[in-house]
Length: 279
Image (cartoon, rainbow, N blue to C red; front, top):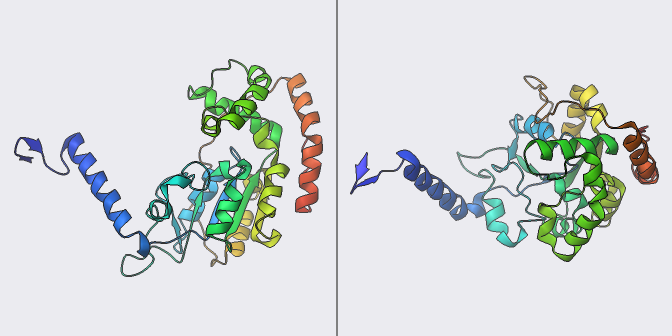
């Protein structure tokens, strides 16, 4: 349909943009009637967060943000509560979309400002944290970004050697952290968890090792549901989402990283009361 020489709504690229604009406007206008999340998946990056949020999205009592990673409590906080709430479904009426709502932004774990912001907005929130052998996590993170053209370093070792520079630049200009991934840093789980524990009780945080999550997915998923106070629910399947083909790490690099992570890992084990046996 053409109106006055322009494609009408729903026709072509212009129509698609008009439809998207109208939907965003409607969501903003109805923001007060929409869910505010009661749980957050706070990390970690490349630890299974995509699979977990998709599994939770299947539950009939759960409403998930329309944006895969809203990043409200780190990168998008300046957009305000109405923007954030507009990402969720309706809380009341015939369009009600579940009993509780949540989202996943795995960079929350290591962001220095996210814990305080989240605590101010949702002090009773339940937090889900997936952690993975940090050596494997760092390598997977590098390969994921490299394969998508987001990492210039030609080797994992080159990227690790560049991390001090990236850390310094990120501290000087916080938005630079978005384009300067820090592979070792994001596996220092204890450092991030300690910041969250300054604002939330230990009983508000469920820590799940990724190795266990993938080896015993059904059991771990049920543990998550129980933690969130949700009824048991049988998933159609347990497809692994956002996976990447495995790739070997240079043995010398692996040993060096394992040594560097030894103390942070031990601190994590003490914080969570569990030893994951990472090497």
